[in-house]
Amino acid sequence: MERFMNMLRKPGAKPEIQGVAPTQYVAGKEFIDHPDIKGYIPKSKPKILDRGLDFIVRLSGSGPVFFLILAGLLAWALLGIKYGSTDSWQVLISDIQAIVSYIFDSFLVRQELNGYEEEMVVAAELESRILSHKRMLAQVQQKLEAQDKETLAHLVSQARAQDTLEFGAELPSETWFGRSITWVSHVIGHLGSITLFWVGVFVWIGLGHLSNYSNEWQLYMNSASSALMVFMFAFLANIRERHDAYTRCCFDAIFQVDASLEAKLRQLTHDSLSNDVVIIPAPRVSKIQRAIFYYADFVGTLVGIAILLAVIIIWVAIGPLLHFDSNWWLLIGTYAGLVGMNDGFVLRNMQARLHSYVDDEFARIAAQDAELFATVQLPAPSDEVVAHDSLTYRVSEAMGRVCAHEITVLLGVLTILGLVAGASAMRWTMTGQLLCNVPPSLIESFFMIVLVTGHNSADDRKRVDLRNTYARRLQLLGYVTAVQSVW
Image 1 (cartoon, helix red, strand yellow):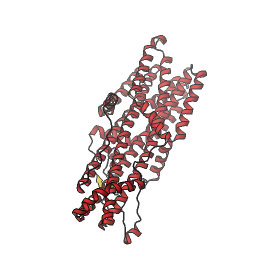
Image 2 (image 1 turned 180 degrees about the vertical axis):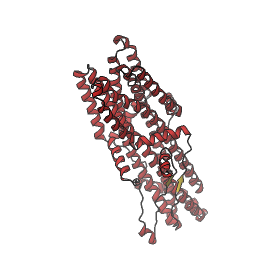
Image 3 (image 1 turned 30 degrees about the horizontal axis):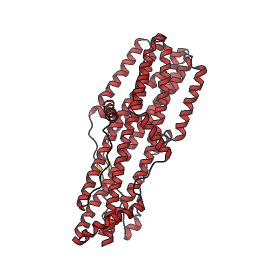
């Protein structure tokens, strides 16, 4: 029983993160037994099921799947010319789109969780090397004589140029296509796009009286917003996968320089102590946030998709009782839409919280790097910062904070309960079900755009952090290379 209760309590907990950088042995038996690992190697999960789920998630964000989704949306639009005026067509398409969006919800949650774990482990490994760097740089500084220090001042820039030729002055750049997708991402996540979305919604509401606010009027908006949602889910999965792949290239470049810095320091100092394990403590969260993380872990294991399959089986089984009418067809879309709306709130909260933990850790790395430069009395390179003085940026950040707040997630749950109560009062007629379809579809579409905005902001900060981290290590490597030349 205790083991079972521990299993129930495990989801939602963000445990401590451990990481240790591979030690760069430079001589002797250690070098033979432990060949150097210079670049970044992503960690493989021990369980086959986890690796299988991660493969499926990576596949969902791949180019072929993204273009397949686009082809499906185009086919839907073309077929709608002939069949779009019928309620059955509108309901069928709404169901398909709701189910696809529901599945992508689970994939995006797992993407966020995997990205957080990977980046925190990378931070721990960087801090692991920093501890060794600090110890060995202090030894180098003690051994340097006054005349050596004067000579170094003239040699550092020359050594930096030499190391730049070997490793590159900057981190790898994205491909042309990758840069184009990133540009599209910033257009979609722009405040102007969000404004345009709500202008369209209010125009639709304003024209509702022409159709007497009929079911057909609602179905058209439900179909349009669902199509937008499917596109946004597929697009967000794709840019996250692309940006994660690019980030790993940056990690590899940073680790290459960092490992070379460690190896040269070990050659200078004959230090053979292994790099220490660094433990990043678990973040403190409120009970509400813990509950949100619990739900996210539940969704991220794709258990939600298994529940969806069970619901579909039940839905098919009750079809004869409802004579397979329009109400029956709409039921599965209603379920997927309501759950998807809640997932949209949870995703935005997760995105903000997890990225804030990673940002804090890289801020610690920057502070520890500053100590390394102080140890050798070397001026640190000026850090690049994210420009945040524009009105668009300030408004987007404020909107993102509101949408990511724990209270907002709770309000989302209460909204869902209110919609269910309203539909129940209407005896789950088509009008009642549309009440549970159209508003959630609009809200979730809005949250998808906000998610893109949040992703863009987090990715911009991440790239700046990585460029600064790379530049600082390249500068330290130039210093150590100069020390080698005078000894």
